[in-house]
Image 1 (cartoon, helix red, strand yellow):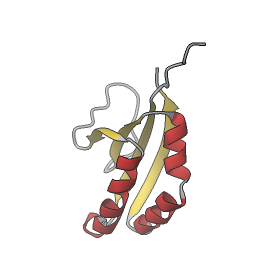
Image 2 (spheres, one colour):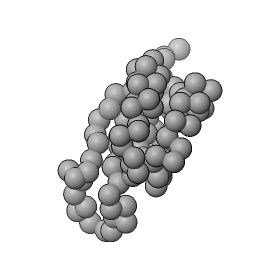
Image 3 (cartoon, rainbow, N blue to C red):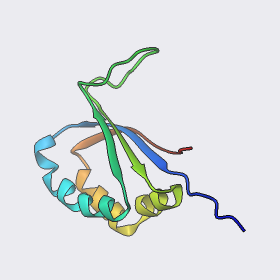
Image 4 (cartoon, rainbow, N blue to C red):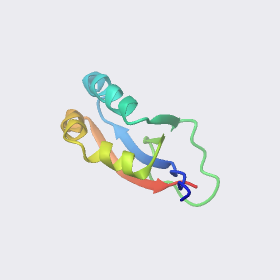
Length: 105
């Protein structure tokens, strides 16, 4: 029997910081969780984001792309009680436009 290689998964989100100076506790708490989940930050864009085609209606937002070892691992991280509790530290400080997870090749 041949082992099927695990495909990476990508978490793609856009958000707008309402009070970036208040996000320190979130950043400190989330870092060990993403490290434990094997996340690799690939890109954070704004103002480096360039719309090449179509329309981008998220002015003032940051686009974030992270790679995880697998979709299973990404979802386990996202749905964990630790992350859900940590995410509450952003309430009132961040407007989330969208968060999507997609399996890579």
